[in-house]
Amino acid sequence: MKFKLPALHHQILIGLVLGAIAGSIFAVKENTLEIIFEKEGKSNTAVISDWKNFSVISEPEKVEVFQSNEQQKIIAVTNKLLKSKTSFEIKISEYFDDNQTAVKDAVFKSVTVVKKEKTVISSIKWIGDIFIRLLNLVAIPLVLSSLVVGAASLGDIRKFARIGSKTIVYYVLTTAVAVTIGILLADIIQPGHRIDPETKEKLLSSYSEDIQSRFSSNVEFDIINVIVEMVPKNPFAALSGSEMLQIVFFAVFLGMIITLVPKEKSAPVLAFFDGLSDIMIKMVEVIMIIAPLGVFALIASTVSDFGFSILQTLIWYIITVLLGLSIQVFGTYALVIRFLTKIKVIQFFRAIREAHTISFSTSSSAATLPVTMECCQKNLGISKSITSFVLPLGATINMDGTALYQGVATLFIAQVFGLDLNMGQQLTVIFMATVASIGTAPVPGVGIIMLIIILKSVGIPETGIALILGVDRIIDMCRTVSNITGDAVAAAFIATTENEIHEENIETVNSK
Ligand code: ASP
Image 1 (cartoon, helix red, strand yellow):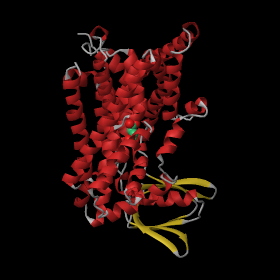
Image 2: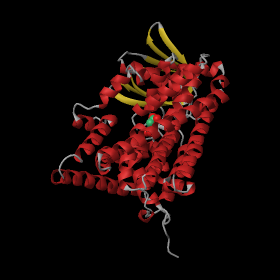
Image 3: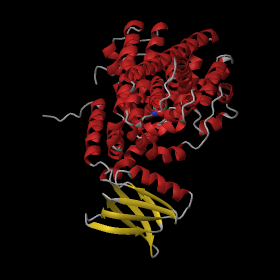
């Protein structure tokens, strides 16, 4: 009997499941720390676990003491001291060393790093990093080239204005629906009122240092400024700085103007971008050969590094977000597909499953974009002129999952702080989350930074972000799946209204 390798999609799924299993078997221990320090000019490593008291002494009168369940906080505090070059020493009492021998007391001076202990998984993380980098490498040239071709292929300005406005209105409406679902669920489930005061204090103190270091830049929101900044002064700087909104603006503008120039001048330029876009898509096909391995490494390192104990404390918040995302994906989108397109719901979800696994593992709509485009073109038969306009635009500005999560997170934080929001404030959240999600860059972890703007708009202290930071990675993975599904649904909807679905173009869905 000949051995046949499972289809790529199944290989990726196997990579994901095996990654989750490997990650949980080799999970980083939450009561263990690795201390690297210098002694007699040499670098030494000590692995300590189950300490009774871990004191960080930065000045004679400044002593902070931590218990063995405060790994996260110890790392944040020592990192901050190291960064600010403040000298300190660590005194630990009653702990186990790396040979599991009980030690009474020890003092560590000239500490250079305090971090979580490495596991076997840390040594394969690089494979996942390379995989994400490869996908990101394709994203920017692909957004540029496909949007130029997409905008130009819409032909005349009237068609461009029709499809452009239809797409934008659709994006804004579905995003508003998503936030509303999030807010209603948070009102019904009241996750913030289900958390006890002790957990609240613990989360706030564990993550507040992280918040200070990660969110130091002052995020101010001014809608006029956002619009002005969408226009790049230098498109090449926008490209090299990955300024997605600016790239979108430039690409669409360029594509539009190309149609106004005589054919003999514009044709070679258009052919260049068209070729570039096809080459980028081909590049993704090649990169996808290592996808099962990349996904395995990404999931394994995320799971192994994740402190699962925090899941329990935030369980109601997580349930609210996940329920909201499921309603958006399997309710709102399924309804749009069922009633507003000529595609079958099952066929749709089968067609984009590869994009689902990639978005879940990379947490990046931009990195997933090439895969989403391929799924829509080859598995659904949506014409290239629609996918190359609607999808890159959607990956940048349409983030329903992010907006939904921002709605839940805002209400959750408000509830924990006892600042329950009235109807007017909730409407402000819907508006602000819709706008903020447009400005959210399609890369991991940006949704939580944009959350600051929404919190500010209704007067909730930004420190509340500390409450949800610990589980953000997992939520990010799920909201990104919803984000890219929303883009694919939009492509299917717009293509249906424009009669741009060509079943004869379907290549792979049945053979996979
Ligand atoms: N990771 C999300 C995306 O790429 C953005 C976010 O919500 O942080 O779609």
